Image 1: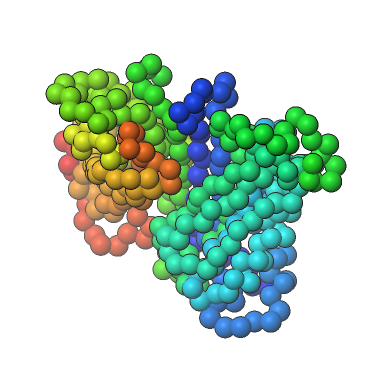
Image 2 (image 1 turned 45 degrees about the vertical axis):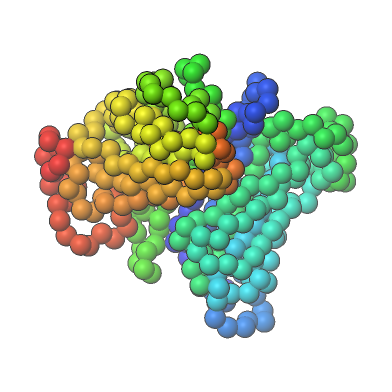
Length: 194
Length: 196
């Protein structure tokens, strides 16, 4: 399968101190690792694309590692995660789906025991397209305080023959979470849901 | 941090370019921005004396410069180019951005970089949530270094709110990827007058 040709890497960290309410002792961190690579299937229909997932696996692990480092380096601090992809205009939505397995695997690998499915979003778009990457709790998808999203994008990507791949991690609940539901302190963390 | 700055959010962005036009960029060019979203104490009213915002600029010059340099993972002295910008929410004045950016932000910014003979290029605007700021970039010691004329786009989807100001600084450890339009080179500067 084709090699992974990286044009650009972007790391974004948001430190949220408050949103008009009482500032918590620890600010919330949300981080994204973005990588712009060539889409080896751009411009034509290719039936057999699944092998590219294996090629993306080392990239996913490198991105997850870099993102964890940007968020302070301690895997125990990471409580939420998500992933996403933007496919340039000469590609298919299905090319974005290639990121599901390597992106999710990479974060689980780096974070150890993460049980919950990694929520995701993808779209086809031009340079500057913004993507809302959904975020949920890493061990129990139903933890309501951790339902969140982080908007990402790069001014000059993806070009027509590129893929923009994204991983997102957070260190906690929404900054002033107060709409009830399952709490992070109440989860069993066995089935990935509760 | 000074008590008079109410910071809601700080965002850092690092951008690394490994290829341009199909050619490898080696070493990759890297730039970083640090952006603070703060309360605008003068939103919605005309206030003659903007001096309190000068102090805000001074505090942010230190904080944001340190964040941006740390995000690049280099020593301040290794920074090659810099810039600054601000976006004022809809209830504020453009002059509020000027009050933060121009009187006092530069000195602590330059202190973090150990030098900075050149003018810090800047831009400002008023806008709503998700406003895009193009932070102009220029060589920190010699404004005429042509390979370092550049800009970095930043935006935060939930800022600035009407009563907020978004304040940004950007630093690089390099010029544009694959520069080839001539002019004064980084290696040729004197770095004394801020121009050449």
